[in-house]
Each structure stands twice: as structure tokens, then as C-alpha cells.
Image (cartoon, rainbow, N blue to C red; front, side, top):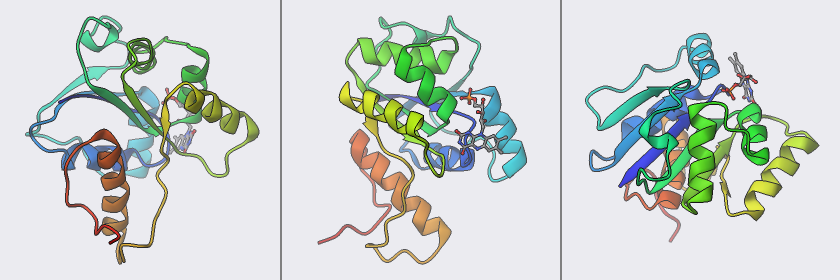
Length: 180
Ligand SMILES: Cc1cc2nc3c(=O)[nH]c(=O)nc-3n(C[C@H](O)[C@H](O)[C@H](O)COP(=O)(O)O)c2cc1C
């Protein structure tokens, strides 16, 4: 599987990096961090970039990168966390960075796209942007806690959320206990 991962400047950039860390080696990853994501990561000081994985990192300004073209075959894209700025750009078709261009490509090629918007609370503009994107097939999947698999720690809570994203993307995992 070829997966595009965009990490933008919302709180929880570390969760995006943990997502990368937990991906199976069989997933080929094309990852872009926005400049604000790098700033947020420094300020929140949670994790560092994973190494030893099947991941290529690109600069958000590298508009000539492979994932900026629809002729480059990928299977899916996830933006996590997705800032309200990037969400807004995605909802109106602005493609002025590699992340937003890759998103626009996925949309035109009718490939699977998941956005994990992070803000609290959402304002009406955020909600309208999410509704619009959901209407055209984008999966809106914010980092939401669930309590039904008896998680006890932050680590387990994060595994649950990441497991839900893996489910949506069709990636096998054993990150949380399923309801049965
Ligand atoms: C530490 C930190 C946390 C932030 N958290 C959020 C957030 O949770 N949601 C959000 O929409 N923006 C958040 N921002 C603001 C965004 O980084 C800012 O709007 C930026 O322009 C987003 O750029 P990008 O979409 O290119 O990543 C945060 C900024 C910092 C520095």
C-alpha cells in the first residue's frame, strides 16, 4: 500500500508521528510536515521523527514532488492532525503547498482521503468546511476518545484512536480491543 501522510500545525503532531511509528513495514509512506507542524512539535516536545521505517519525507514547499501529480499512483491519504487552516484550504481547493496539492490530487483522482481535524471547540466555519468535504467523499475522522475498549493510559487511548484510523484505511492491526 502507498500512503500519503500530511502532518499540519495543530496540537497533537506527536500523535501523527506515533501513527507513522505504528504503521506496518509493508506500508510505503510519503510524508510531509508543514512548517507550522514543525513549530508545534517543538513547542509540544512530544516525539521525534521515526527512523528505520518505509517513509520518505518531503518539504511542504516541494511542489514538484511525486505526490503532487495524479500520475503517481498512491492508494490513500490522511492528514493528521489537520489544522483548521489546512482544512479551510482543502475545502475551497487551494493547493499552495505540497500537502494541499497532494490532497487536491487525491480528490480529483477519486482516491480515499481521511482528515483528522484538531480544534476545540469548532466554530461554524470549521463545521461548514467539514460538512462540505464530507459531502464530496472525504472521511472526517477527528482524534476522538472512545472508552469502550477499557483503555487505562494515554498510550492506550492513542492506540485506540490510531487503530480507528488504521481501520478506515484498511490497515490490519491489534491496537485496541474490539467490541464483541
Ligand atoms: C503549539 C501550537 C498548537 C496549535 N494547535 C492548533 C490546533 O489544535 N488546531 C488548529 O487548527 N491550529 C492550531 N495551531 C495554529 C496553526 O499552527 C496555524 O493556524 C497554522 O497557520 C497552520 O498551518 P498549516 O495548516 O500549514 O499547518 C497551533 C499552533 C501552535 C504553535
